[in-house]
Structure formats: C-alpha cells, structure tokens
Length: 235
Ligand SMILES: [Zn+2]
Image 1: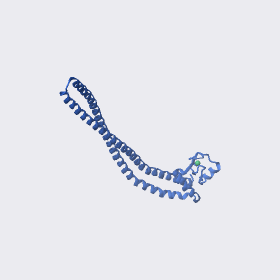
Image 2 (image 1 turned 90 degrees about the vertical axis):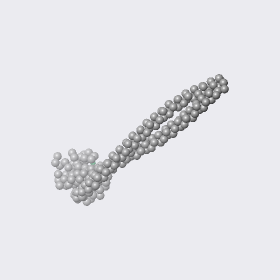
Image 3 (image 1 turned 135 degrees about the vertical axis):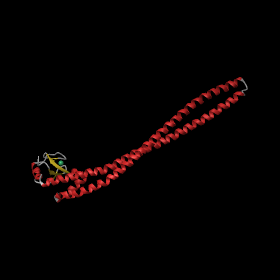
Image 4 (image 1 turned 180 degrees about the horizontal axis):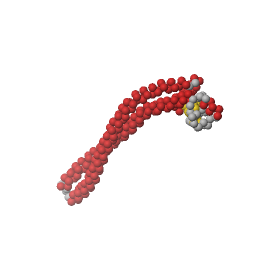
C-alpha cells in the first residue's frame, strides 16, 4: 500500500470502529424503550382484566340477591301452604314451590360458576401483576447497565473522534465537503476500498485509468457516491 492508501484504510477502520460504538450507544436505549413498551401494553391489558373482574363480581352479587329473594319467596309459599284453604290451592302452591326450587337450584349452580370465574380472573390478574413487577425489575437493571456502559462508550467515541480528525488530514481539501456529506449519509460506508478492481460498495468494475489514478494515491468518488481508495495493490 502506498502511504495514502494505508492512511485511507486507517481512516476507514477508525470510522468503522466509531460506527460500532454509535450503534452500541443507540442499541441500549432502544432495548430499554422496547421493553418499556411491552410493559405498557401489559398494563393496559391488566386494566382491562380488572374491569372484567369488577363486572364479574357485580354479576355474581346480582345473582346472589336473586337467590335471596327466591329463598324468601319459597319460604313465603311454604307458609301459605300450611294455611291453604283447600286441596286445589294446596296443589297450586306445591307446584309453584317445586318450580321455584328448581330455578333456585339452577341459580345456585350459576352462582358457583360465577365465583369460580371470579377466582380464576383474580389468579390471572395476580400472575400478570407478578409478571409486570418482574419485567419492571429487569428493565431497571437493564437501564442501569446501559447507563453504566454509556459513559465508557462516549469516552471511547471521543478518543476515536480525535484519531479520526487526525486521520482525515490526509484527505485532499477539495474532497472534504463531499466527504462530510457522505459520512452524514452513510457513516463508515462512505468510504470504499477498491477490491478486485471494483468498488467494494457497489461492485462496479473500474476503468484501467481510474485504477492507475487510485494506485498512485488519489482518492476518487465512485458512481455510487462513495469515496474510493486503493487497497488491493498488495494482491
Ligand atoms: Zn461504488
């Protein structure tokens, strides 16, 4: 490699390292945000479950009231049975009591079922609450570790920035504005070593003239926009 391509390779490597650190800096908070979003969704679902539980309890209470009034009606009918004026009235009361007792038994089954559903819903809610608490502990741990790493990563990035600025001194001044725009758009991929006589970003084959210029230490923009540098002279 000519000194220039070695310098370009160094600049490219530093840019790649800087890119990796920026990725890591972004990844942590992104993971935290994604997990918080999952917890928020679980909380919304928990509220819906709590509302459903309240409705179930109201339904079960209503059935309980119906049961009480059914019981007192049967009690009243039994009272009337004892003082029935004649056989016909007696029979009518008996069949009324039988019908009421039947519907009371159906109601009792329904109440039992309603209470079982309430119990199940309460268990589900408890599980979701535990799940949310566990997730919140995990996200707090993750947040702490992301924050702990952040300072170190920022320090590394700042140190590499200094090296990058130093390495960029080999760039001809006339390519700098375009180079800055490329870096803003593509990051480290703004730079493309020429490999096998092609641009390593878009694989377009280069003309012999361009290869000669690159090998003599020039930097050139590819048709794909990247700043190319020679890297395959050793091959
Ligand atoms: Zn290209």
